[in-house]
Image (cartoon, rainbow, N blue to C red; front, top):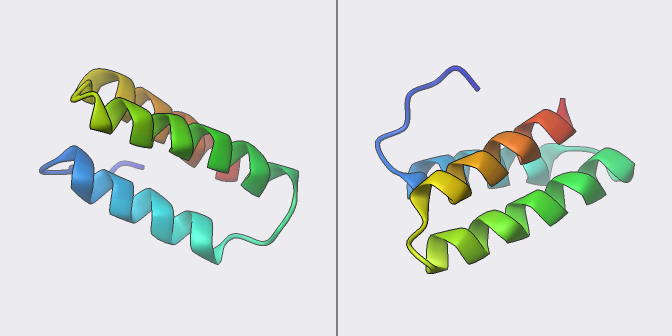
Length: 62
């Protein structure tokens, strides 16, 4: 995603929207795993890890 995000929360919403619109299948399953890891990182206030996981989720959906 080339868009600039003001916060990890914004990026979480964007990736979640992309995930919701994606067709079912292995790509969506892989993206969910990364998204859940991002949620864990966000809860732990680890923004760098959260962004890394969200990027992986986006890549999995591509």
